[in-house]
Amino acid sequence: MRLKSALALATASIAAFAGLGVSAQAVPAAPPAAQVRSIGGETSSTGYSYSVQEYLEFTIDELDQDWSEWFRQNGYSTPIVGYVIVEPGQPFQSRCTDEGGQPLLVTHNEPNAFYCSADPVVIDGVTHYGMIILPVTTMQQMWVGNVANKRSQIPGDFAAGIVVAHEFAHHIVDELGAATGVRPTGKNNELIADCMAGVWMRAADERGLLTDTDLQEASAALVAVADPHEGGGHGTAAERLAALRLGYAGNAQYAAATPAACFAAYGR
Image 1 (tube, rainbow, N blue to C red):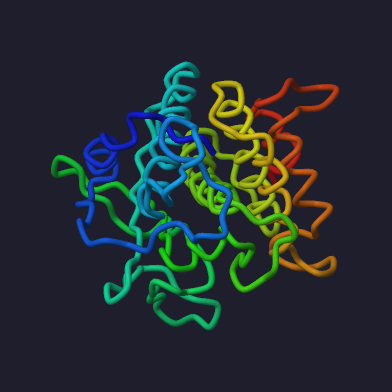
Image 2 (image 1 turned 135 degrees about the vertical axis):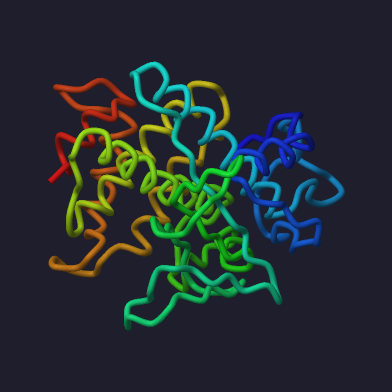
């Protein structure tokens, strides 16, 4: 994904959006094998010009701007979600539980990213709920094709980008569910997040933020972490790709980048 020249200014605005302080502690730079671009879109000849943390913050900021604008245009209250980038030595204790029912303690290399609707975010003395949890080392490894300990066939920075968009989409679906009463269940809760991530991808692509390979990187990442067979909780590779493409490209009934297409397909 191309990073705008204003990336250096993103930290303050994102911290205010999330209601969280952004740590000044250095995080690992983008892996050297990655084909990422420097600020301004030119390939760096001296190494990487941004850290993983900056890339994640930039992506979250773009997601926030685009979804907030869509909510305003469609008469909904602006969505408010928090995020935390989990760094080495600073594990995050969530109010959600893991698959074994134990309290979820996320470390920097936990092989997953998370959205927890129960985690609080306090802004101007008002408590909101919803937190995106991104382990920094896990996100870093996605650049070189290690997606939550699964091998992606097309490595690249947007493997991390699509994961962030997917987790952000969970909150968007929660907000719309509260407003409309439509709440997906089972694997549809994951597939609608893939679909809504595709909606945002199309909007980002139309603004020139995506590179030529980003859609392939996103698709490969979802295939890597798909259920190996029917009956799983996230959807098979074919199902996850269909959801992403529905959001990105639409279908005979819905235009590209139409959230209604996602809810028509998966809102149950």
